[in-house]
Image (cartoon, rainbow, N blue to C red; front, side, top):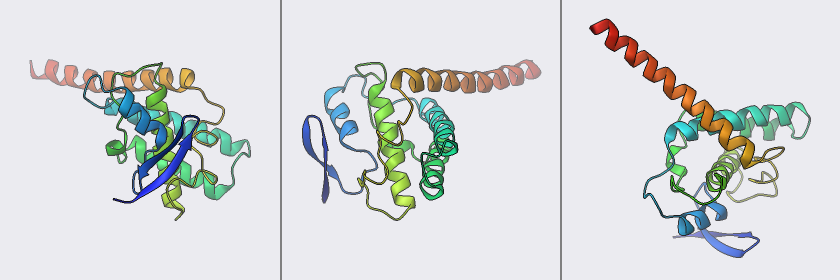
Length: 169
């Protein structure tokens, strides 16, 4: 297997060359193996919506050129549609207030945007999980917002099923 080298404040690590996740996700997988199941997919899709709204705002404020913004927005749309589910690997139970989930999402979106631009994964000088995908955001904002969106979306599905059940009775 081929690897790319990524670094963070704790040092350098090998990340599989074709992985959309990065070093932060790798560390979270190693440190938080609690539930043995990934983050709920409804939450992942809702994170895509939150990140899409943030990316449109940052683009509108002039932080990114059109090419970069379009790639990030397409990656966010793909996450909303469930196309990137297999790349969100952090455990459903984790330390902190959802930082591992937020960083897994940021890394996947940054690397998917890089792919869309035809650039190598891990080219974080071009699109960074922290400096771009987390621009003007905090886990303390994005996680509870995504959680609320996921809950509302799941409640809508439940409502439809209850109505269908009532109609059958």
